[in-house]
Image (cartoon, rainbow, N blue to C red; front, side, top):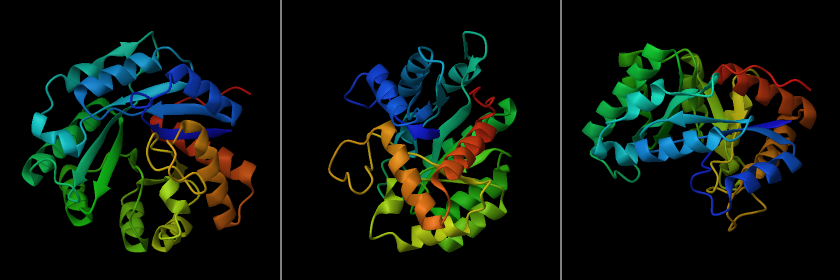
Length: 257
């Protein structure tokens, strides 16, 4: 059973219920829908409330750092139907590839969200693109939360070693299947078995052989099977391990089977 630990159900063109059902048919039994703005996070929380196997994050993406964090702490403190809590802060971090927000604001908003994760003992979901040195600098200065994941990890072996040394989890998306990503596959090889996760980042980054199509949570099984084969592991064992890792990262009780 697979866990898509990073998807955007708020951005899918299909109904979330359909996406969850199609995922279940592909043995993807747990999903984390991730917020990128305060409004988007609120929608993610509302969607997660409708399912027993979907959880949500609340955060502000570096693209939107220029708009600030107003209302985010309220969302982080909200719970849904008892134990239906927001399980992580994010996605947040630094993106120097697009620079949609000034870098100083990105760093400030990132640091403040790290503090929010510390204050609430929540996991932290990091987006880092073309900004590795500064990402590590902010984490070292603020103190990396014990449960932190680099989502859609796109670094090479050096960045993987740096992240793992700090205790982070690395989550691999469909990019790991691209022929142009040998360094990413090398990074996956270096990632300990108790620190590796798989994701879709859907509706983005459909894996080979589905390039050009809208991605969906069900396709995390495609990513996982590719990665298991690359690592020389049995697919079922790798699915179980990555699911266990995601449960541990987000503080979830394992599913009863």
